[in-house]
Length: 418
Image (tube, rainbow, N blue to C red):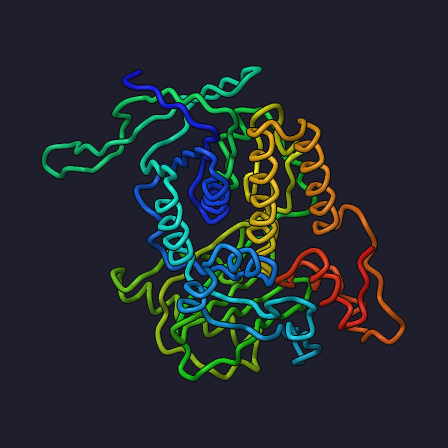
């Protein structure tokens, strides 16, 4: 070990949820260290939609104005069948301070969070990777590898990342915000429960030829979903659920095409997008001006059997995953971050007991069991449309809301979740 580090809380993973956790802790005066194996905030254009409850939390931190400058505001969500538009839900009817959804590139959100963490004295260690955890009665001892770049090969040098040194970090608590393949969760020996069949999507981000309405659009047909998110800058994202977990409708997977690839591959991607739009959304008339990229992504409906133990706890995608339509996993993860940061702050100040952490686990596991359809009942009122009654479970997972907001949105189309 070349050096040691002492911190109150070590947060592993600098995605939106990890950064939000670190920010809330730093704001409360907690010494927090955030580690991330990448070398900077996300440089990709992956979009994220922020729910009304997330906007309220960002407003309290004084970040909402900056987020709005980078974002597109959506006022509603419309559901379609193969025949056309079936029902519409308005965010304006929500009893919320900010009754709308904001969509912005994930790297923009992460950059804003990272900047605020720095102003509060939080430490972000880029290119640092967790390698070991040793829970103790009074804290956690973590080993963190600092990654450095090195060139290998002679005729054609290749750049690789290797361990430069290992740091021993002594923390009172560790928060795992390190995503679907969470190393924190695996080091704790916590398994997932898989609550539904995985879903495979092919996702396209592109610039349409004509402007789109400020609404999320979801197509539910043949037990598959297709989702249109309008994005800032006149772009959009279409996600098409495929028939199985290992196939596409056209026999060959799309693999991250870009304009640097052979023209034939780019042309094939364009043609597949056109064909999917014709099959899934024949009413989509905005056209295609330029395709940015496409990729196949698998989503699993799963929930960690525990949110943590002793002094190591999980937030966000480290604990759960679901289908992407409503971006529920990240937004509920932000709520988890707020709750867990508050609890850890109290415990570090000697205010409260470990029962608070058990309450945190019970609360959010119960919410996720409901969101994932493993508990609770979704019922339809007598005047709900037959199409809504037939597709209720798909509508539940496709709404960009949670908690009381989700209940209020479902009520607009005659659905009740209990």
